[in-house]
Length: 331
View (spheres, rainbow, N blue to C red):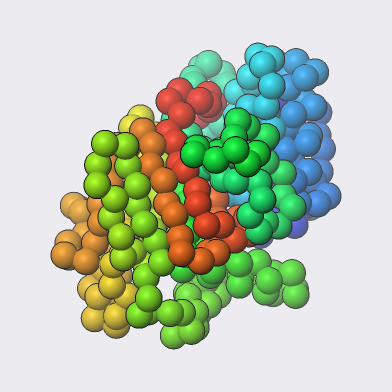
């Protein structure tokens, strides 16, 4: 089995010594090549090249952003698609943990080696976001697609493994990325503190989002949305955050929309979604979508946009699709 291991050398929870141990362990089980990522989007380029060269497996040692980049590179073109191995190395590792892998990279490697020995694979659905190319972006890679729905403008698309967001949560992601660029370490506390600061800065009186679904009336007056391909949405340390508990890798996309962002509404929601909770969050101001094949979010003004915890610029209209059976994972 030919495998390429992509390593993010700046990943939060690994160091050089630990990476060397993991490389030796995986190299004993497969015919292994190793590449380190050097810039944003590099994992997409490296994974695409590995697919063209006929690699059987692409392994990723890094966080959710590196995994997302690699997956998008793996799915480019019409050649045979490699399988994916995920070794968690980031601060949250939502995708790896949703697959049932331990959060510790050494323990996760043990589970991966067992899957290799037993030939164990899992097929998972992915999400895909499509937006018009002319909107404000950050220059990150995305696949060129057909014109956006209802438009003659060229469009771009990108797959996501576990979540997407338009609005408040993406603003928090953008702010934390800025702090990381200034040398600060990403941590659950930093995300929480940043979210609190942005909550008091955000416009909580003029909702900008509309939800559009085929053959259904649109829903207006939405402040923010959380789109999930699995559950939980993220983690605060060891505590899951689960706004869409029915989401899963075997179903379509789920969405939670908020039509109020006052203190009482937000406090009630946080109480319902943080920790080991069962059942959908309740509230007349909440919009629920479950197991949907496709829907579109449009905004009255440009809004921050994120996929798998990566900020991707500001958008005014994004279509989200479920892509069944898109990826095979050794797990």
